[in-house]
Length: 562
Image 1: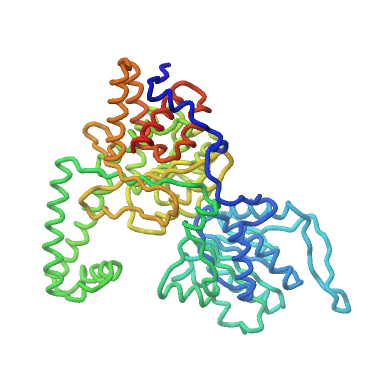
Image 2: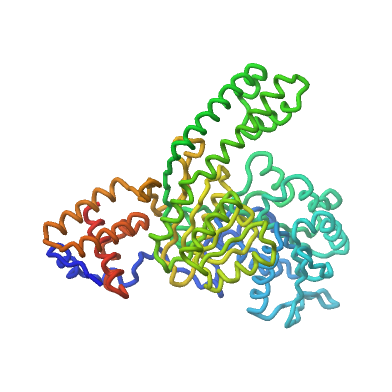
């Protein structure tokens, strides 16, 4: 394989590389999670105990919320000097199994202590080698009297409140841990808190901990505070990145365009929506000041109104809105972009692709599986529980490199670690965006950074991109042309042209110039060119083959010119 050489490149190889012995810049010392907590977890636990063992916590996905909760159990029992019955509520059966696994690991790490009192009232303790864990949901119906009970919310709705009330009346101390607690604000799920109306909160030994990456606001926040306690701690992306509790990450916005016939259809649908909305506003002025949620709720009611003209307008508006959203979601450029992107990414990267529609996920699966036979899997609600489990396990074990998932996999499913995420179809839900980012930023040995690619259609209702609070992490704005299967970045492209011009002036032959173009095409979608020169030199010197070394040589040149 060709190794690029020129007077310009030769000078680079003599630079001092001592400053990049680790390849990354460390911010603070990362604690060993097996024996200690991150600083934020310690601070949060102190706040929680100071609030009487009640409160909700908002912490970025992947930063250690489960570990925090398990240590909260130990801290509460130590402070109270008595045994505590633990109730954990989760949204899905998959998450129930994930918690059970984490709890077993936590309990096996040390002997368990059962706290009690002797006949004179002195605190005593006895060691036990095993503390039972009970599961309720997902086909499991373990006895509800075990110390640690984990419930799927569907099972908890109609039995948990009664069980907690019985144990509180018997003098037991109860700790209720509500994971993904934003799910339990309204409707039937809120019934798990019905016991609170029948106890004296000042004297009952009731303790609570709510966990979420995205706590609700306004009235929903007040509702959660009433049952779980106030928001006592927030750990956002900026702090998590700075303290290295999550993996450093880059965000790539990739702007796509419609094909001509898709653009024509989009414009026609938009004209229809504008006409209907104008007529509806004239008839129902309150629509103009309503929030998006309120507006669509009112439109649904108007679609069955007694006035046939108003009902017809509302029905048309709702139907056309869905058609236009589907057109944007299923635009052909999305699949083309995802396929071309996977070909440019490092073949060692493990990739998660998030789709909004099952039909789209299946089409992409067929296309990628033809290119990477046996390396691609997909998970969605129509696959069946066991098939999804098998696929996730194959991805976890490394048999699969690319996993395509649908919306049902965004939350409450233990998706294995990956370093690249591709959001095939955008979403306006900030919680969903945050959850997807959290899938790829979990720390893992040997994982230097993560990358999230957010595909969006230009000049549509989807043109608001994902802008997380990302601290020192990088944001790249790219464009993609499906006609020529190429990506573009103005700053990078200008520097790339200069690198190629330098090679030509140095007399590089056609083969070397072609190799440089290959490397530069890879770098455009990877973001390595913004690293420090010392880090780029570090990677270059440790390249395992000539192709990889050529890549890092080119990235150094881009970094110097960009």
